[in-house]
Image (cartoon, rainbow, N blue to C red; front, top):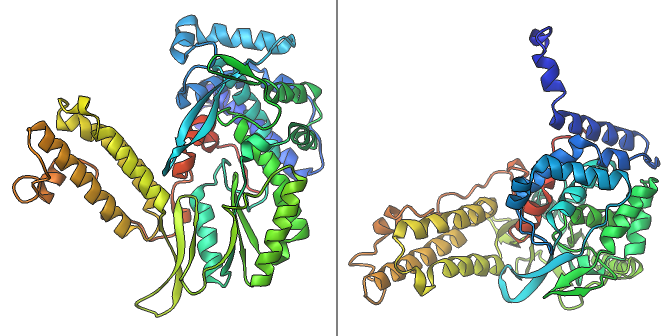
Length: 475
C-alpha cells in the first residue's frame, strides 16, 4: 500500500466497504476478547450501516436460496434495484418500522433416512439481509467467548477439526464414549432463555427487540400461519449463531462443573464426550441429562448411549463418519479409524439413484447425466476422503458404475449390465464421471479446508455463510 501513497489508489482499497466491515468486526472481536464481561451497546446503528447492509446482501446473493412467503426472489430484487431495496431496509431500521414476516416452512429429507424429514424455515430475502447484517455485527462479540470444544458454524473451524480432536483423544486412551443426541434441538430452544443469554453481552435494547421479533415471527406452512412458541427455524441466517449462543451455555457449564470427567466435542446439536473410564462416562451422561433439562433440552433416550470402543467390537457415528478401533497390521496396536457411516453411504446412493432412475431422463445424452452426477460425487468425496475410506469409496464407484451401465442399457433398449460386452471399467472411466477411488487422504484432517462442511450440514452452511469470514483475530 505504501507505494501507492499520493495516487489515491491505496486509500480506495483501504476504504472498500468489505474492508470497512471487517475492520468493524475485528474491533468488536478484540474488545469482546479483552473485556469478557463487557456488554455492548450502540450496535443497532452498526447493523443499519449502508456498508454492512450491502455486505449482507452480497452474502445472501452468493448463498442463493429460495423466496420466502412473499414470493420475492433474488432475481426480482435485482430487477427492482438492489440499492433501492437496501435504502428502504435502512429506512425501516432507522425509524423502528422494520417488522420481519413469518418464515416459509418446507421439509427436506434427512441424509440417509429417506422416510424422515427435517423442517426448514425460509425467511423472505429482505429478512435474510437484515439477519445477515445482524450476524456480521454480533458474531465477533460472541465468537470471543465461545470455547474450543465447539466446532459448528464458526469461522475458521469445521467438522474435520472436530474429527481430528476425536481421533487424537481416543488414541491417547479415551475409550469410553457418551454418544448423545438432542431431540429436536433447534425447535426446543427456549426463546426467553436465549434472549437472556444474548443479553449477557448485548445491552442494546433495539438489538434485543430485533432478536425477539425474529424468534416470535412464526411460520407459514401450506398457506396457514402457525405461531412459533419455541425454537429457532433452521434456515434463517441468524439461526446458527443463536443456536451456538445457546449451546455455549452447555459448554461453559461443562467446563465449570464436569470437565474432569472427559473431553466434550460439540458440532451444533451433535456432541460426544470422550472419557477414560466407564464410571466417568456414566457420570458424564447423567450430568448431561440433568443439565440439558435445565436448559429446556431433552437428550434423546433411543439415540443416546454410553459405549466402550477400546476392543474394536463397537463404534459410534459422528458427523457422518463411523469411528472404530482397528488393529494396525504393521504395529499390532489398535488405532481409531473413521470411514463413511451407513447413513452417509445410503445418502449418496439415494442421490445417485435420484439422478439416473427417472425414465424421463432416458433421452438425455450420457454427458448431461455425468454433468449432474459429478458435483454430488465430488462434494461427498471431498469431505469423506479424510479418513480410512478406501473400501467405501470403491463401493460407491461400483454402485455408480452399475447405475450408469443400467441407464445406458435402457437407452439402447437392452436389459442387464453387460459388463463383459460393453460396460467395462474402461467404459466407466471414459464417461468422465468423477471416480472416488484413489482420492483418499490419510494426512491430518485439520489441514483440510475449514470451509468443508459435514454432509448433513451443507444446506445450513450454504445458508449461513459463516465459513466465509476473515475477520477473526488470534484468540
